[in-house]
Length: 606
Image (cartoon, rainbow, N blue to C red; front, side, top):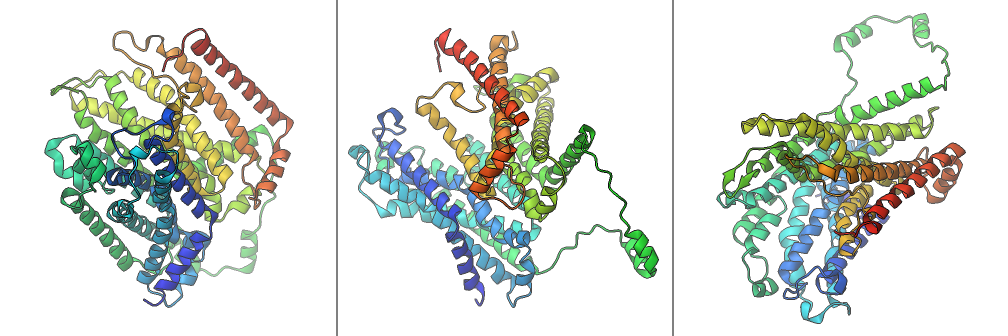
């Protein structure tokens, strides 16, 4: 094991010295504390538990830890997958490749150190749960005395195996492809397997799919305890037997096989990516080149400088093409989209059934299916690709050249927002095609393309566009790609908490709008008018957020807080201040108009 332990210790020390590690630890601690305290009646107005069920019972602890472990998958993606990718990103990999270190020890050391660091972050969750159960604010009748086994059992049965399996998959994908997009595609595949397992749980005849497909063990755990009494839920532990045990053994075996195969097939080698024509290159090498020909070949013509609107438009189009190529011009984007569409097709199997009778797949039913099942994948794509676009130049090492180009700061930001919007439009177009395919497969031919276009490319796009601007803004401000991913995930998970706190009006929820009901008899009726006003409000809010993102856009080597504030003050020119002021006034006016109509002229109802 020579070289294995020093590399594992180095990887562990590297993460323990980073502030992001302790930020993750603190976030998991707060989440564990908050969920347990709320379930134990710490806040009467925010009670998420059942007075008959113990908040820190073994089964409740297991479910909470498993849920928080799922929330930590993006963290694992960045910590374990990034352990190897970091070497290729920083360009230090030739040093490792030239040392007397075998590929297995190299990958194994990175894997062991990163998994231990990731586990240290996740341990904040059980610590927070234990502190909440011992706090003076909870109802004593709804908590048990501290039982170490109640926390250790789900950690060993669920959390640690999930970390080992996902870490092995992410590490091997990063090592062999040297691209984080491949790791994102692997994460989408795990999410697809988990979603299909949830769908299979609803069908008794597909019981084996329930425990086999779920890579995280949540579905077999729910299946094993779904008929437990209140007494059993307050007393017993998750059964480490039956489908849950087989699920753990199956996925641990898959993880071990993936890691072993990755170690065996990994080579310390450089990848050539010049994309040169082999015959042309050989011909050029055969013919000697005279010195005067070389001098003439290397002569650079004088550049014609232009700063007109036409030049800015050409620069914007070039930046947009490059960003689109970075996102869509690889094999991983079709894989990610395919995972999204495969889940929609799996969910369509039970669509339109009423008491065992299958109905026609009318368009509004298909659209409900698309929004309900497609939403999770679209926000995942927005979250991941926002980080890829913002960090692309810095990761490939061209940031200094790119940032020194004579282009205004707003131009790359606008191009990346437009590129991410195009990605969302491509996903919605693919969803429309799948919806029509579902109708065709059921023998229904009244497709209503106008309804598809209005619902997907107006209603849903008005929801996704503010989200993608927010994702780019977070990536810009935090200057840490994987922390930005995690914060966006916290936003998605934490938004429903505002409803529980009593903030139920849609004005308190970014990008929210009223539910619009479509009927084959009268269409949308009057429901489209409030959707329009909310869409206008959040589009203006996204414009205001984009102005703030422009102020803090990273350009150059300055990433410290004080330096960025100083640059933001310099970038706040009069034209930009006028745009921000106009957007702020319009946001306030639109929000006031909505509030006046919903809370003054009418009584607000949830």
